[in-house]
Image (cartoon, rainbow, N blue to C red; front, top):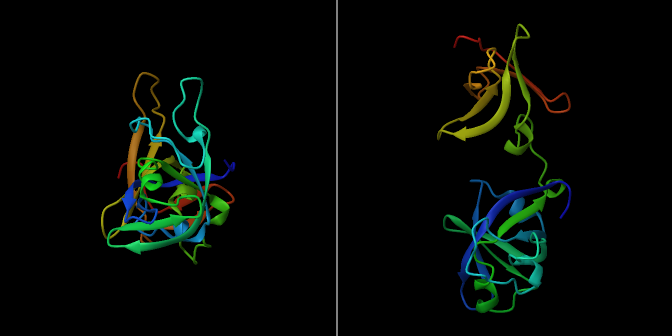
Length: 196
């Protein structure tokens, strides 16, 4: 598994009889699935009936130790309704495609398409420190949430009192509040105050 591997979806089920399979992407814009021809599979966090990968026995849960990733060479991936369907050089028929059900799909971050100006992959924003215009720390991005028309940064900041839980803040990730995103500097500057 590449060091920069990111989980981008899960295999839902077989699709058709020729070895195609249906993928549930983690993103509404699954460009990473389309841009990479190398998908790394790990079994689901939950056991999937002991199904083994057609490409390697190491993809299935093993009582002797943790599962090893399996490289799946993708021949084609395309949009289909609200999912993605794909076929692999390693999967010849429906039975082999069914054996992949539940597998988690990882692709190298380096294979993601280049983001446009003022566009960011959520994975790149996680962990960034958020400060306001005055330099006051507001927390660290622990999650992002889509509310339909906009994305919201979910921040976590350690409480000033040791026995209290971390303070959570939500800031809309829109130009009206976000002044600057400095990915190399790992910092986001916002027009926001502690008491908002």
